[in-house]
Structures are given as C-alpha cells and as structure tokens.
Length: 121
Image (cartoon, rainbow, N blue to C red; front, side, top):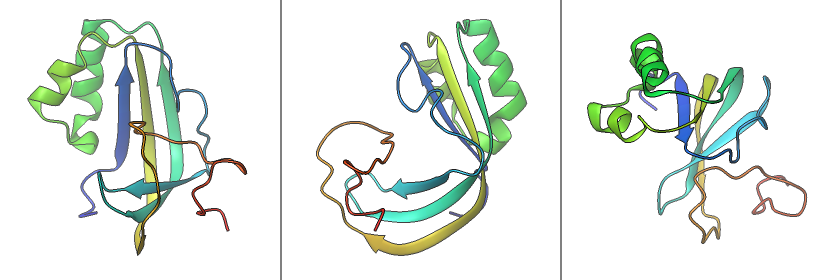
C-alpha cells in the first residue's frame, strides 16, 4: 500500500487459479493474511508463463523484481516452478476493512455468483 509494489506475482509448480483467469480491467481485492479485505486495484496488464525453467525465472526476477519487491528467499523458493503469473496493478486504493469467512488456504479466489463472500453486493 506504500506504492512500491506495482506487480503481483504468483509462481507455482502446477497450473492453478488464477493462471489464465485474470484479464485487463478486472478488479482485485486484497486480504491480509488472517485479517480483513483492505484494498482494491484494477488489472492494467497480465502475463502468464508456462514451462518455466530456473534460468527463465532468474530472467523474470532481473526484469521485474523492482516492481514485485521479492527478496532472495522469495525467488529461491520459486526456482523450480513451472508456471508464472504477473499482474500489473493500477488504481490501488485502501478500502474500509471487510471481514470475510474464508477458511481455506487458497491465496487467490476468483469470485463468482456462488462464491463471493458477500463482496459482490
């Protein structure tokens, strides 16, 4: 929220949400771990990467880390990931904190009519 991070990143060993599901113009909501939803942003650009190698991940780090803000441990833990997902954030704003009942371990949830935690009202 300090304005330094402009790209949200996810790297995984298997193809999983939100890979291929986020588009320019989508609205993102951000929830603190164990806390409330407290910010929102608009997707300005998206890049999905498949069949990544450790060498390609190093190149992504060199090119984008200044906007991702990942430390050495972050990148070391992603070295063997095959899938990558970068989202450029625009119009990042704090919102009135909203508590939701999310009890699973998913880091990303694509909100639908059925599963929206009351956030789509």
